Amino acid sequence: MSCALLLLLTSLALAMGTGTAVEIQRPRGVPQSKRQFYEENKPFTCLDGSSTIPFDRVNDDYCDCRDGSDEPGTAACPNGSFHCTNAGFRPAFIPSSRINDGICDCCDTTDEYNSGATCQNTCREMGRKERESLQIMAEITKEGFLLKQQLIHEAKRAQEDKQGKLTELQGSKKGLEGKVEALRTVKETAEDPEKEAKERHLKSWEEQKELIRMEKDKTRMAEAFLELDDDSDGYVSVAELQSHLELDPDSDGSLTETETQGLLGGEGKVDTSTFETVWSGIKDKYLSEVSTYVMKTYVIQSFPYPKDYAGDQSLICGPEFIWICRNLEKEIGFDFGPSAEFAYLYSQCYELSTSEYIYRLCPFNRVSQKPKFGGSETNLGLWGQWAGPEENLYSVMKYDHGQGCWQGPNRSTTVKLTCGKETVVTSTSEPSRCEYLMEFTTPAVCQEPASLDEVLHGHTEL
Image (spheres, rainbow, N blue to C red):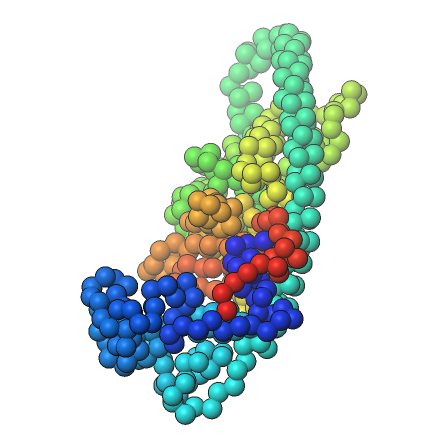
């Protein structure tokens, strides 16, 4: 249970009890915590120590102390504050300027003791409603924490499983590389007689090979363009290319908008004629979506390899194999929280639909916004880091380097995580231009709650 929730429940405990709260006599507007400074029949010393005055000048509607502490119950001091006892609810402070202004600020009406305003004491009703609300929150926290324990248990088991797969995958990779090398040696030995014939006709042979290579390359380029053109509009855009992380030029695990535009020759999108130039720069890294799917299915779901596997060994030991190894290594080494409680969010996405947009949060990947009635998707930020305060680091996610605003900065999103039984995006806003705020509930942030009975038997000033 959070400190704020604990304090609120504690402050309501005695007020909502079966007994009647007893008002402790003290000068008007003085909280119980400062009662010792206001002793009748003794001179009063200003709380800032600036001067000492006779006690009959306390609350005489004239400001004697620079800090306003001699007038806690009047509006005489512009920097003073009035303490609302609010028996039955939570105590509060209001500026002295609101005393006797005709508006009831304290739920117990004590701020309007001489204004003639008609006020009703609503403290007990407000306390009852808030206590019910806090009890519901306490139950949510309790259930969320139990779910968190399950998430931790599942994350630990999944982590061990992934580590085992990675170890086996790395071992298989070395074994396959050795087999491929042996097969290559056998192949080269068998081809030696052919080499002599090829050398005699080297020129025509090379020309023929080049023609075949160029034809294959054109075919592969055309297939790649169709794969990348997700919306079939005849263009490959920055957003469409950005999902292929294997093209990341600096291998930092993310493909920023700037990097993607660089791959597209500085353009936001390219057609088939321009794509030919782009293709020459990406073809060595580009992974076909079909081959990637086949590899993931084969290597991860059907692990270990069948002994009688007769597929293309060069494919298994090629970039697809390396890409899968790297992604497993990246996931295993990721910071998913102190007990990996956030691991279940990896590779998942959550959406929130508003009247205009569909917001999409893919934790540890990116945040995006898409018009509800047609239009292109806007990147609101790529995963950056945990950004909560030192004592609660995993309460905030930061996503940076989103799509640039017109004559403004790149978009970014701050995601605030709160305890809940469900994993859901609850709200989005744009408090500053191009800086978005997203509220996200998850059981992964729920803390172990204090006993509700223990909290409700606490004590507080009324």
